[in-house]
Image (tube, rainbow, N blue to C red):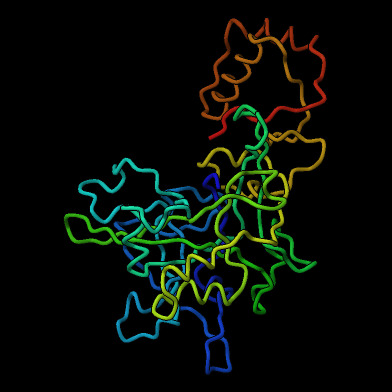
Length: 336
């Protein structure tokens, strides 16, 4: 998993989409959204969620209320990228890559072992996640971007929220990913809740896209077992994590490559014949290095509002007039 997800639902919508059945009760329960200060970091719905962003995750209510049933659930906003509990100083400067953690050896990790042993298991929620094709020997700038999501009802379109019918109970199937969370305290005693996504080797058709996958919980039973740390011990919970058998994906524009781009174009299906750079044009792809360099610099200056005419511009434009059209459009070079 490369490290981008999509979650555009508001807290109330998430509560509705995360209803669950509890033993001994006839009606489905709805998890309560519990807001946290998180050192000033807030959840903001986004089409392009990146590490250090905050998103709501499901946890057992027992973590926040000693009198609660461990089968009850809360929605709690947490930062993506676990901050070690023992870290001192600025939480952004612990120097570790903790967005994802490998299932292999997880129980023996000095970083992830303690949260696992403490039952600090969570379920990360998203409408889908983005993945870049890495199984082919391509340069980062040439990797195709894909949007991966759960199978949906026939009329539900992932890029069209009006088809989700949220106001009538909702038909949207969220992806539910197994993770671990920890709690870090700053020098003032303020808490920061943060999580990591568990991943393992990919099996099945998705192996053609990427060699690792997030640990997706496909059934309500798996979600219940993963969250209920009192009923299900750590070793049994880890055995629950198996490759997902039902995933869907489609190619998207490389506008998602830039983590600052939060627009609704990120998860739109890429139309056939259009360039992956989000321009919507098949375009001219210059073959001379001089023109390639000029176009890259020109695009960046245009995006930053700093475009200025140069002495090279006239020469390059003249060359462009004689350049043949390449039938294979190239994606944006700014790949994360």
